[in-house]
Length: 396
Image 1 (cartoon, helix red, strand yellow):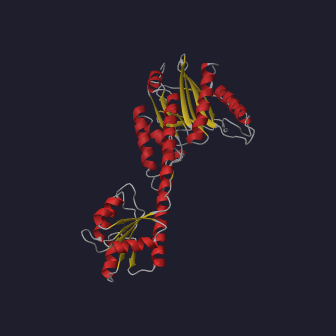
Image 2 (cartoon, rainbow, N blue to C red):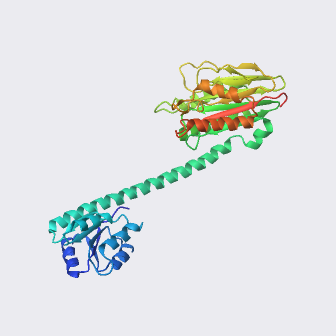
Image 3 (cartoon, rainbow, N blue to C red):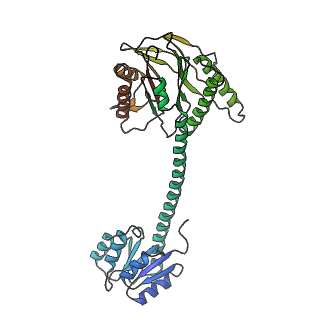
């Protein structure tokens, strides 16, 4: 994996005596030799690449400058350090060797100790570069493996969310903005048609990324079991039972108490009676009615371990045709951006919903999504984002 010892040195000189003399001084290394520039390049591009090139300036055919230029131009050899060796005492030569990419220059005649030290310094630096490259490659391989797993996990998570064809069947006019921060999301949503009623769930689990996604998958499974097997439909009953299940699950973990949970807004819409039942855990519900925003607050406690665990309450809301109902996580309003690089904030989020509330839901999604992207600018997304909009229509 790392640069092997002894390291390899290519000595390039048209004098075999000079090659022999240098080789005798550097006998602790593996030395290779070339008496022409052409042979030097062939060896350097071969399977046994040198870790350092000692290069004479003046040679028949290709001189040292041309050899060094060719080495530095080739991506396979550009990182090999080159030390020029010459008896020419000319400042212009010194300047030119560094212009073509040399790492060092040794004037002949040289002291054996000087040669060893300069060679050792360059080889040590080369070894560090090689080992760092290996470390980086190893990290990149690990990152690629983790990222591939995350994207596969994303497919699994998205497969558990309501399919677009089902949403279009049970919700005539709606939109969903769903933006995981880290490939997988701690936010999730559920939609269930129950006889003549419609159940909507928008939840924001503690954290994001893998921890949040695990929490969301567990919570989705528990809610689906309540709905499909136990036939629990009312929002406050879902929240109360979900909290009990989550608390009991985490309290079985004896080492460190896990206090994670989720915030959620749940509504059950009864189109026969123009009523909506709402329960929220740290999550409000917004309705845009004739251009005005109406807020319904949920209980100020999460679904999970919490000092005060009073029962969640349900609010009955009378609905009017064309009411726009919004369920959401806090990711949209918490995003940093804009000219002052501040949070968007809830007050501005409300203004946006009121501004676009008269639009068709598809156009609302486009406008709200574009605004979020423009607001965020070059900032990173700070949290998972979930926003569901649904326009209520009588007997929908």
